[in-house]
Image (cartoon, rainbow, N blue to C red; front, side, top):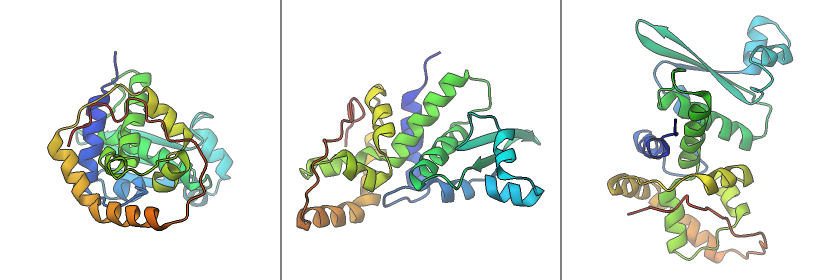
Length: 219
């Protein structure tokens, strides 16, 4: 079964619009907290609540879930999600992990799809949420030299996210949605371009390689 990368991209774009996100870096935490049927806890808060060492709490979710994990239960025919995350990781990891878990929830993953498909779709959702293509397109159109470091400062996406972006197949998002996100981010875009052009830049890092991430983009 092939992951639906286009659905992930469209859903992430719709999420930016629905929650009125208008600047970067995008944080998934307030979105999760304002999503019906979702409860969010840090591993430390659970540890304090049940009076158990946080390392024991993390081990409950398995060695592969050191950053964040989502459980789902059905109540009255509706899914109820509990998201737990490791708040002691760097903000970059926390942001990326929570965006991925948000993707699982928004995309309605309930365990019926294969795990590898679910994970690919959730990571694609996270990339499009944290690194909105309309924002990147606006910076490219203005002639900004987007470096990996610049992208990281903007969105929290560094090499890991870029490596994911480079291998995501080209997807199309309705032009109307792209324009709505661009308009939401316009003040941020204008201010950043002004800052960039007036700053003394000595960044010699490589240009960000988006691969096919921007292919098929229309506005």
